[in-house]
Amino acid sequence: MLITKIKQRFPTLKNNPALVYLDSAASSLTPQIVIDAMNEYYQKYRSNVHRGLYDISLKATEAYEGARVEIAKFINAEPNEIIFTAGTTHGLNLLAYTLAPRLTHRDNIVLTRMEHHANLVPWQQMAKHYGFEIRFIELDTTSYSLLPTSFNVIDANTKIVSFAHVSNVLGTIAPAKEIIKIARAQSRALTIIDAAQSIAHIPTDVKDLDCDFLVFSGHKMYGPTGIGVLYGKKVMLEEHLEPFFFGGDMVADVTYADAVWNDIPYKFEAGTPPIAGAIGLGAAVKFIQGIGWEGIIQHEQSLTNKLINQLTNNGVQIIGPKTSNDRTGVVSFVIPTVHPHDIGEIVNRAGVAIRVGHHCAIPLHKMLRLTGTARASLGVYNTEEDIDKLMEGIKNVIKIFEK
Ligand SMILES: Cc1ncc(COP(=O)(O)O)c(C=O)c1O
Image (cartoon, rainbow, N blue to C red; front, side):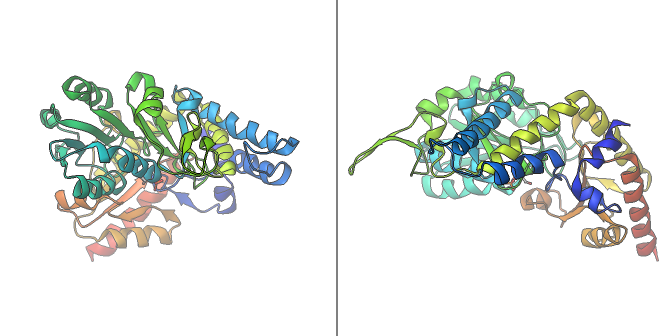
């Protein structure tokens, strides 16, 4: 079907025909059109943006700003609400550093128990400095969904609610709209969505979600490494968020004593931006749109169901929701008597790439009393044969450790 043709568009898969790549949650592979878009920039019009009045610089600016427009449309935002960053971690740190100084010991912020370190550690560090409390929306450890009865941790003193749209360990989809509604109703808290694991797998509409900020990484959505996006509502970027990095391009005027900021989004993009990365990310968005959400969701849900069923039928324990409706295709699992590193090592011998360990979510693993998990995560290029190959490896693991 269509998807087998998609495999051909990824040079890493063409150059490694035996590779079964099941680690897209860590980083997805890059299709040829993304590489071509970046190569074209490097080979034909390599120059800086927003500075030169000569042809190739104007072309670079046009391509860079064109990518911003594509990305804005992709998440239903306005182009000036899109700030290019180095990735999700960069976006979350930028928000933590700029928003936390307004908080005091009377305030609290709310996260969930399933956050990646990138949406936990920056807030912990800020809390030490500014004295605010960090609260957590709890996880039902049977269904692996967020517990609605604990949404009441959001109260009148909550100033920020920041959460992963999809857990990078459990695959759980957070009820984002519901949480945001509660945050608005309780205290008009600022809302931040970490979309690192959702952006390539479920459609994102920032107007419908009504979040104040949303962050994601290019390398998890078939784009290049080193580029990401911080979306902010226009009113937030214009009136609430102060620039964090200072330098060239983010200023409208400068004296020896002070500076006046440029308009949004430029006041948040100091210095030469990641030009090739942004152009590549624009091409990645076109790649996703070219396949279409309906095809992506149908394909990934069907593979997720197959993966979960096969693992379960072989006595493997799934650490996450059991049906594809409540989750995406990032599937963590444990074989109780086998260390996850042994699983990873043995399936790698058959050319199957999965991730093992704590997946940058140590507190979540500790809470679940797990030292680590094995994690297979899907992308558009995966096929039923990939799942079969993984399962051959898993059966081999079970056989070896049964002895
Ligand atoms: C949910 C989530 N948040 C944040 C990150 C950090 O993303 P990056 O390493 O691209 O900054 C990841 C990466 O795995 C993630 O899965």
